[in-house]
Amino acid sequence: MTTLDPALAHLDARTSPSSSPRLVCRTVRVPATRVGDLLALLPDDTSQVLSWVRRGEGLVGWGEVAGLSVTGEDRFGRAQDWWREITAVADVEDEVEVPGTGPICFGSMAYSARSQTPSRLVVPAVVVGRRGRDAWVTTTWLEGEEPSPVDDAVETSLRPSPAPRAPESIRFSDGDLSAGSWAGIVEQAVARISAGELDKVVLARSLDVEADSRIDPRWVLQRLAQDYDTTWVFSVAGLVGATPEMLVRLERGLVTSRVLAGTIRRTGDDSHDLALAGSLARSSKDLEEHEYAVRSVADALAAHTSSINVPESPFVLHLTNVMHLATDVAGVVDDTSTSLALAASLHPSAAVCGTPTPVADGLIGELEQMDRGRYAGPVGWMDATGDGEWGIALRCGAQTSPTSLRLYAGCGIVAGSDAASEVAESDAKFLPMRQALTPPA
Figure 1 (tube, one colour):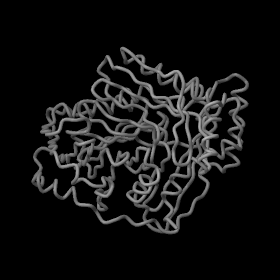
Figure 2 (cartoon, one colour; figure 1 turned 45 degrees about the vertical axis):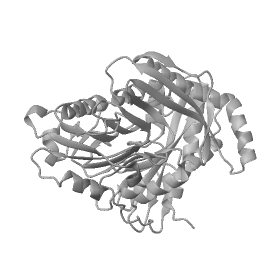
Figure 3 (cartoon, helix red, strand yellow; figure 1 turned 30 degrees about the vertical axis):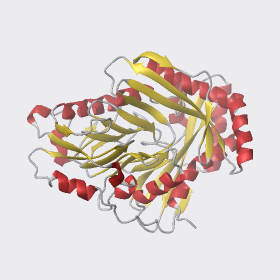
Figure 4 (cartoon, one colour; figure 1 turned 180 degrees about the vertical axis):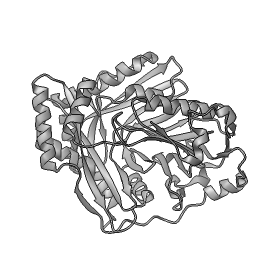
């Protein structure tokens, strides 16, 4: 099913773009020193807060010129077709011409074809970006509209907005299952793995958040960026979080993917954490889980590449609260795939589903007792050339009302998994969002 805002129905993929109003897009170069903190530019007076930022670089956007909502098995293909059709006839002037300039869409795709939550693509009215020495402002409108002069729009876009306020009286409660009930389904999964039905399954749990005041996504983004600066801080259509996992990046024919699987919680003591990192790198259970995830990514990318590089062993990625086994896979694309098409070919990877994928996905549907929505689905952005970056929506929450969120966390289960340890790992993965929502002491 495809749904669209009625005001934007002329941009539906089912409508011929040649007979519809076109996107008009202007990208203007600005001095990088003028941009400042990208997240501080996000205005408070919009329902669309869009972000893809890491260590001060990336993209922020607001407003919505066009948007697509789509569900079902073919959601990736229909989203890609819609984007290609509207950008093919767009009126574009781009002074910068690097990935992320010109027309772009932010996107957040549902994990499962069974999900009742639509996947979303959003074309912002304004984008501010920074990449190395390049910085720019992109404004987009529909042909026939009377936009503000581009110079005025650029000046307005570069003014920092008033600081967001912390939510008041945050309360956390169990989502669909309590921690004890979720431990029970972990034990069921281990039994099924031990019986030879599958090798690995990733099981997720949820946590509900309520506040006495509005939960401003800008507050959450700024806290996440401050505390977890090695992650990509994202916000698309009410889904906000900080992911350490780059599912796929496509830039001028080179595709890269970072695989994370195998996790251990940090203690905060550097010497102890160093010892824990060593134990993680030697853990047969975690190495097995990681190997499944790497193999699934390499096999999927092989169908789209002329050459591919897969390191022989993982490295340990140190994040603020946890450490992961990590492997960076790279290849040269030899077909016309967009970054979204490559993300579709990788999704769901063993890192968020399991091995074999069809069996693991079926077990998730049987045991989890919840709709993941857009949690664990691809999230990121794509430009008119098809280049883009798509992470996996981890360490995140979906807004369920102005004062509430649902948080998600998942763990890879293999034959050697212990239910109590997996509950502790899931608690560690909830920590970034819990901290981001709680005002500093």
